[in-house]
Image 1: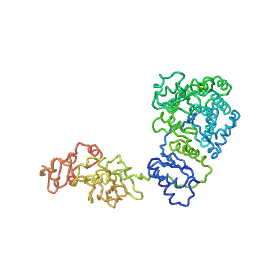
Image 2: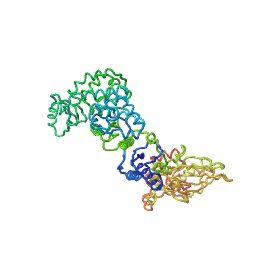
Image 3: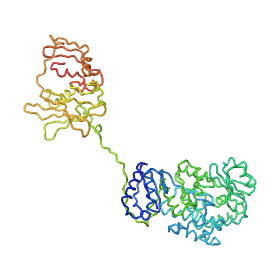
Image 4: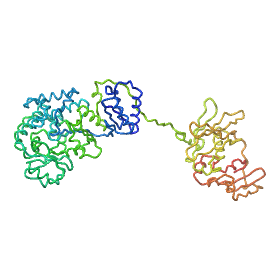
Length: 637
């Protein structure tokens, strides 16, 4: 019984498994999972995992392993990848007694397909295929082995088809290519059965003898040693091939290599010893009808993608019986064509290891059946592995006879995406760099200005510090008051008081609100400046004052310095201020001269030729980098 889990990240997968594990622990009366399944909730999450088990305890143990980041003992922890799915149909040697019988008992689709194939094969054999499958002795005879493999592979393909597991590409190893050709549409079922039965019968009729030996070597190493009727029967990997021919010469050649294994076969297939049966086999092949492949095939005869009609000639199948199987080249060609998931279709897993040697590390190669496992368990494990690696499997069709119940929803990762106080703040209005955006207050003759201040936007403000902390200079409050007053014909600032210093953060910004109230009987309006560090922080009043309509202008100074004014010594003034904690950086050191005349003071100020000039000189009536004391003197200029 498979349980399927998935998450968009490894952490999400573990969280999902933990959520399911918690659900299981709080629902002890839930029917055993082996008799139930979760209602499918398909989504493209990855990476996936598949947990398999027969009992609730086995499944729970598997889920716990996934929650802890471990691969379950019975299951798969995959890495889903995009790519095409290729089916590899295994060749002779993968057969075993009883193959397909458990699948036929468990899955009607397999049984129906097998019975259909058997109906075409039985008249061509001298005994029923059902008898052959249960006899180890008969199944070793080539005349029965090849038709039996064909029947099981076709039925297994039809079963996979019922689960919506459909290949994008096909290849077969030796006799496995007959099943590939049939499901691709090259041969109808009747003609495919006739051809594979004739092949097995004619090969069985040849004199026994010869040998086939697997050798761990490359073609370049073996090629110069061929002779005496010995040839290469199969190239299964970069350094894995099979030599075939008369027993004596074949064994002598193999003896020159360290790693060899003689195969248990009755004949030396894919060698010159097959030539006596080729003409009669050609006659059988010529009497058949052929179609065009509907699913792309890679030929194991050439090791290259087959043209649509390449397999539709008798000569192809004659060469196929005699020449070498270029399986390694075929697997490479499948990968080059985009295959990233490979499934071995047959009763064993012989091709899985061979294909893995030909592919990049991490490529999924999955056997759908295994000789060491019960068939239905092996099939579900194989399908789960394909699913975990990204192939599509219709589990609803596979488990349609099961009831369902609800399981926990997806374990979404909780992340806050609320905008902070430093984000999304309105940019200054085009008319003024400090006030920001103006909003007319509904139901009142007043105005609200909203904006923000930061050292990032106004780096020159960092030159104004008290006790090492950057503060908004008092002249900036004066400038905001003058600018706001000018828009409502109140050009005079009266009684401006800084009630709380406005600290500018080294990082981030402060939000500003400046309010201009309704006019009183004299036309004066209240003015306030508020600031807050971030969303959710309370607003603090930093300055209050009164804006009045402009009165008489101060008399123009016709002489400078004013007559009778006494100069003030400014030597070391900024150093003395720094000793008192008031630090004026270069951009605030514009005081050039000062004079006293009674209770009045006069100053000569030069606005620094730095970024503030471009911002303030054009838009500010009182540049905020003006020394704060000057702005408070009525006679300053």
